[in-house]
Image (cartoon, rainbow, N blue to C red; front, side, top):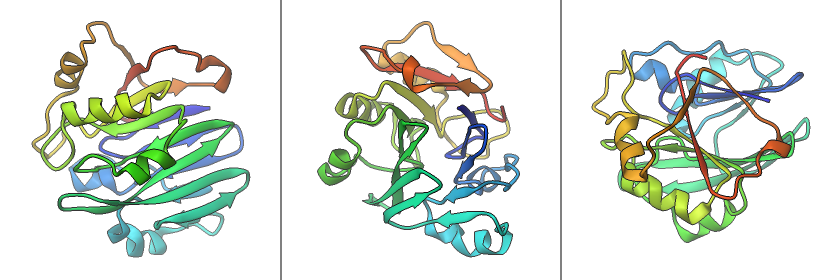
Length: 208
């Protein structure tokens, strides 16, 4: 499986036969290039994007934008209700290729115990770290320490072209005490490789 990041909370998960897009409208809101919408499954964490997605939706694509449990072509999804300081979003637990993902999008506060319990046992966590309209580094680290994923992939931080007042990933890395970091354009992972005893952090470059 390959993971690509397009900025903010937009990720693409892709294997040989399936493509999942997460928050494809998020980059464009902040002046970044949006991905092609060709996918089998689109997840929206912000229901405000649903009307636009319905207009753009391809016939073969399935859209999920609210809490609940779903199964699409052996992809298992659980949407969880997040109530933050100023936001109400749907965060997700998704299982694909036997890898369990936690998708936190642009949350602005810590997770409730109920959401934390439902995300227990995830392998890969997509988590915002930039502060401002999303959680800052300290809260991100607190969530990572609570969930203990095998792999944590930061999002929603300052990158070139982004029209938002966010901190760079270096601030998060400093808070986490990480000096040497792996930065990749596109990440290839398999379940059998996720054997880290401690959480590994990987920084993705936007756009793949």
